[in-house]
Amino acid sequence: MPTKLIVDCSTGVTTEVELTAEEIAQREADAAAFAVAEAERIAAEEAKAAAKASAESKLAALGLSAEEIAAL
Amino acid sequence: MANTFVAIATTTVGSGGQAAIEFTSIPATYTDLVILTSLRNAASDNGRFNVKTTFNGSSSGYSQRLLYGTDGSTVDSDSGTEPYIHFYYGNQNGTTASTFANGMIYIPNYAGSNNKSALFDSVTENNSSSGFITAMTAALWSNSSAITSIKMEDILANNLVQYSTATLYGIKNS
Image 1 (cartoon, rainbow over the protein chains, first blue to last red):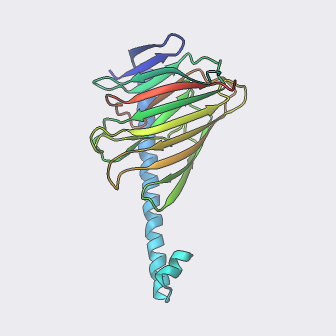
Image 2 (cartoon, each protein chain N blue to C red):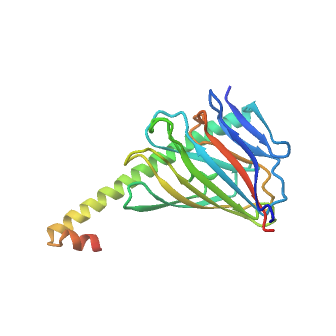
Image 3 (cartoon, rainbow over the protein chains, first blue to last red):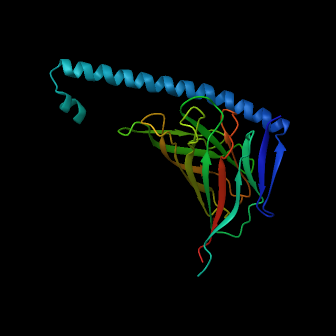
């Protein structure tokens, strides 16, 4: 069973306690949802980078220098 | 001179690791709160993990905007309205041994009756030219309650490893 550290600021006492069933369920649900969202974010980043590279290549083919493309 | 920056509590993860660190019963007697963290998780990858942060056990009312850099030349941005704040980072266990991410959370007027804004700054460490991030996040918790507890954990449910630390400070304006 996973455990967490609880620091009681009124006493200064730290205790190690097991996560509740509710905490575990929330933890697993959040992890699953985040994994999906992160995969989508990474895919979007990669698509954006690919589009940028494609656009730069086309601009170079039109005769723009690397410095001119970077200045856009 | 007034004692304006007070260490309220600190904790260090022991051997075996912990799923989360949670500060509870935070007194309302300060003006602002600061949390300094040094975090590393048990995931074997060479990169960063997102630290899920929640206030008062709440899973609603959060929004966040992020500026971050990972390669030294490009600044990117992101935003979100998930049921937690997660644009805050720690080291994964595949990074250089014994390196930990540094982070700071600043929460002004945490005990007031307005919504709670917060600043999340974090820098992962890798002793190399890759696998790191520097991130600055503006977060908002739309809730009028005083913050009395703060919980931090890996969003992908890995344990925080031994020697991860978190210290909660109270700031007084007088």
